[in-house]
Image 1 (cartoon, helix red, strand yellow):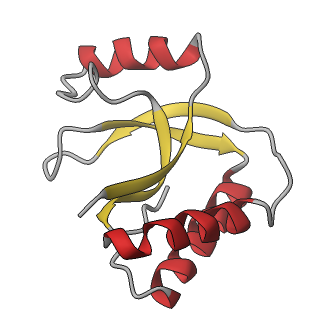
Image 2 (cartoon, rainbow, N blue to C red):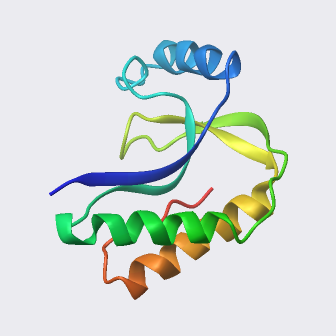
Amino acid sequence: MPTIGVAIPVPEPYGALLREKRAGFGDPMAETVPSHVTLIAPTEVKIRQLASVCDALERVSATLPPFPMRLRGTGTFRPISPVVFIAVSQGISYTEMLARACAVLSRWMSLSFRSIRT
């Protein structure tokens, strides 16, 4: 089954700077996973559902206007995971609305998406 996730990429040059900092904090995925804000964690999707899921995600993303996002401060999921994250300090309301809309979509399509809380 294909695996998909939903994320907002961190634009350059900030993405590269964050990857460098993540590596410095010991994030083993820093070199292979681009800097991003996760809305839905990686989830397996049946091939027959993939096109429908992608179409629905496009519709969900069109429900909100473009919004500014500011990232500030760091945290980690340790000891559960070595992942280091940066907090959303501006645009958090829109980010949370997108994550909730994706979670509703996942329930509607009977997918087992794991929503990420910021």
